[in-house]
Every structure is written in C-alpha cells, then in structure tokens.
Image (tube, rainbow, N blue to C red; front, side, top):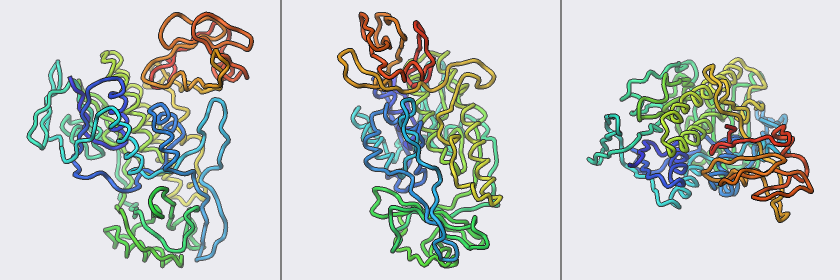
Length: 458
C-alpha cells in the first residue's frame, strides 16, 4: 500500500526520497499549481549537508550554492567594515562539512525533485488534500482532483497552515509576535558585487537596517530583509527601494522576483503523530528565521521518519515523535533566543555559533527517556586493497551499518571490521591508517558500534 505525503517542500521531498530509494510506493502531492520560486530558507546547516550527501544530492547542492559571504557594513551610506556571520572552519576527519552553505530554497527543492525523479516519482501539482479518515489498516484520503486514495500512512508536510494538523485537531502551541514585521524578497540590485553580502543602517541605530545576501544560481539576485513599518502592508519593489533610500544606501533595485511579509511565528505541535498520520516540517514546528533552523529541522524530520516508515514497526514509528519533537523544541529555543537578541539590539545577534549547526543533536535523553541518538562521526580509512575511503561511504544508503573495532565483524550485510595498521582479517574490513576512526568513536579493541540508517548511533 502506498504512503501519501501532503506537501512537496524540502521536508516532503526528503521523506519521499528516503521511501523511494527503499522501494516503498509513495505519492507526494502539493496544492500549488507551480513550483515555488524564491529563496525563503537559503541556509543549509552542516548536518543537513551530511544528510544530502547520503541522499545523493550533495554534489549538485555544492555546484549550485556558495559559502557564507563576507558582509560589507555601510552606516549612513559609508562602508565602515567587513564582517562574517560565522568564521569558516577547516574540515576535520569527523566533521567533513563544518560550514553552512547558501542555496535558495527553490533551487534546493529542484535538486531534490530531480533526485526523486530518478526513482520514478514526481510531485503531483495542483492536488490538494481535502480530507481523510483513518482506521486500523490505513488512511482514506480525498483529493481536490476527485480521487480517493487508500494509503498505509499519511504524512502532513503541508506547512504552518497544515490541513493535516487541523483535521486531526492537534494544537499548534506558541505565539505570533505582531510587534515585529519584516519585508523579505529576492531582488536585483545595480552596482553591488555579488560576491559579498551587504548591511545598510544608520550610524545612530546600526542594528536596525537592511540586509542584502547574494543568492547563487539566480542571475544576480539578492535576498532582501528589512523591518516593515506599520503603514506598509505589502512587500513591493517601491517599499523596498524606499527603505534603502531612507538609509542613504545609494543602491538601485531593478527587479523583484519574490516577496513576502514575515511575522515571527514560534509554534510547536502538541503531537507529531496520531495513529497512521504524522506531521513533519513546518506542519509540526515553525521557527523565526534567526539561526537558519526551519528548513534544516524539517529535512531531518523527513530523514528520521523515512526509514522508520519503510520498516513499518509500530514500536519504531513510536520513536519518531519521541525523538523529533524534543529536537524541534530545543531548536526553537535557539532560534527564539537569537531573535530576542536581535530585537534587543545585540550587535552580535547576526553571528552564528556551533549551536546552529545541528551537529550536537542527541536523541538519548529526549522526553526523559534513554533512546538511540548521537550522530555517527566520519573518519578517513582505507579499504582492504589500500584505497582511500571514509566511514561515511560505509554508511551511505538506506541500510544500517555495524562496525567492530580491532576484531573481525560478524558475517552479515553491511558489517565491517575497523582495524589498526598492519592488521587483516577474514570478511569485509577497513584500516584506520591515521587513528581517526578509533579516536572519533573512543573505541577499544572489540568495541561494537551500530549505526542507524539515518546516521545516528543505535
């Protein structure tokens, strides 16, 4: 029986890929009649890059995107300094992608759609979920096309106004801060170097201003972010231009490709599951943009849920809410703290620390329970023929992996011995030539490590 996903943003697409590559029949629908064209969530965090590597899309993401740019700060129209949101870090054996990557959401979605199509699955546009009922054996869903679909499970990845969540009657607990409104848009700007980001403000109020961030693979567009006055109600090119002119920026905007008015929404669904129906992404949690957490958290929802749905075990599916709701609550706290610092005029509010990278996620004590968790680190090794490879290469794909350090591994699929230089054994093995693998796992001889399909330790 098929699994039905409502919503074809990054969350739904990640989930669909996870299911399709395991041979699970999946349909993904979206009420929009055309694909989203805008930057929206344009910051991909390090853990998301690791997920994308496993999904087989990282090379395309790297080719289409770019690293975080330096920001040229202008006060009263004068360039006063350059600064970064985060200082770049060198890759390490256990953290191969330590830095965030910039790619507009529409470009990221296009890459994910292309990957999904390789499995023969395409997004069904103009198809809205209008209602559903569930029983012990499945879910009966009604679509706007007039079709009735019988599915084993339904996943609502249909955004903050989720039809799935509302139909289930699950409370969306939290607040909307009406005191803050932001203009967001994708614009072309004459005379700005696309290799840099820009901050324009007044010298007497440097924390209240306009940011222009270059968007790669967009023919020179910048993402525009600025406070919205009480008099303004729409994000038009004229309002955006007037905001810049009031700051003496001396920048001419020539084209508005996408725009929206944003209010800080901080909400968390009371439950992520009811029977055979699940919530993921913005349907389950919505974040302020500070810290770049929303899209990334949704991608990891889909990544967590996919292998569990493919397995189908009721006990395993129960861990989805236990694990992901706790993570979402913690990440919401990080985003909210950054937003409050920004509102208070903290000059370091735009800077990003390690708390935003999502590499420190652990499921071990979520909701007070001892459960699986902790990301399995990477490390360089060589195969039995002496060819360089990585632990991440062993983990890649929809399977779970077992590592046995310093001893032969059991005769089982995706089970490997991790040996010291000079050692060999019967069966599949890799050699930790530089000692990074033993160090990353703090492993002693005979230690056994089980790595889940989503790259966390079991």
